[in-house]
Length: 436
Image 1: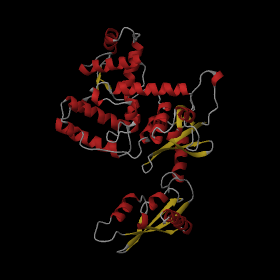
Image 2 (image 1 turned 60 degrees about the vertical axis):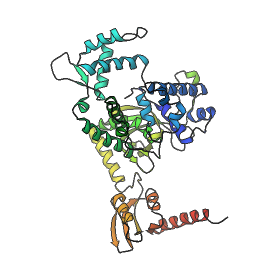
Image 3 (image 1 turned 180 degrees about the vertical axis):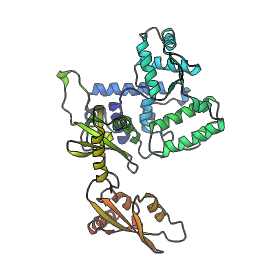
Image 4 (image 1 turned 60 degrees about the horizontal axis):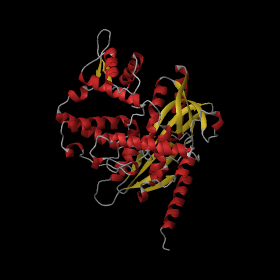
């Protein structure tokens, strides 16, 4: 995993995906809150990433920047965040040094001093040589992210590549594992680790001369190309929750005209931003699978707050709080969202809806979907033509898209105001289809 944040690149890639490249340089710069010069520099950086990522491929399989970013229908993956993480947002010396360390530890277990000798004799002469402290820092980082493991025994400790998974399984088991990871990484909640594991398994099987059809058995296409980008902040937030620490970040609401602000170190060139500095205690992270959005639920001066992860930039951990304080805030949150369809903290209201069974002898997919997706709601009445579903939920805003997705198979019965809203919406939709 990369050490540096990708705030600027993430916001740039999200805009590029969502606008399909419709913005010109000036519009991109204004939206991001950066200069055109910085925009051009970012473009060059991303082009270099594409070039370095695919340099090992034959010429005919290499990808151009526009092709990589705009459409990857079936490698949907090269999801954008994986694209950045794979590129190792590291300095050139770090990138080369870590590559040397991994190559050396792939053959045998080595000590920090042995690895230092290897780096000093193998690293390019135009790069500065590392010292023992730098090597130990690299080893600690690689161990934390699970790339290497420290062997048991007395000092000096020996480190080796963590590849027991690959060597402990037969080829058939590796194929089965790859198929499972491939399906899960592409159909469930997006996860960088899932893509990295799939990528690593694919490379290993390719080195074993696996047939192409064996490692590309499925094709995928995402509806939300940019949703995995928000995962960049997820691990920082989860770590803060685990350690009961507050976080500080610059937040841009979805309604903001800008989505990023450059960090100017020269006071002569400081610019006002539309972002708001937030300091809050993170309590819970929720993923909305329907719209591909990550939400942070937190507690600050104003009580419970909700943030979209796509608007968070420059995040960092702050001071810690006591366990009792954290538990009290978390209990308050759970009480508020007990009946939330997603994250709504409004007043609970009982929703009653009639669902109509499909005609004929076909499987009752309507009932199966309600049973599967209806959360804690219950079917309270049923006959051969329809059934009535009830649920107590915080407000009707969040459950409305789900009910509306059933079309003519769903009729809202209560509350009356919600029923009227739905009638008005369907009349508006009907008007769109009237003859001209």
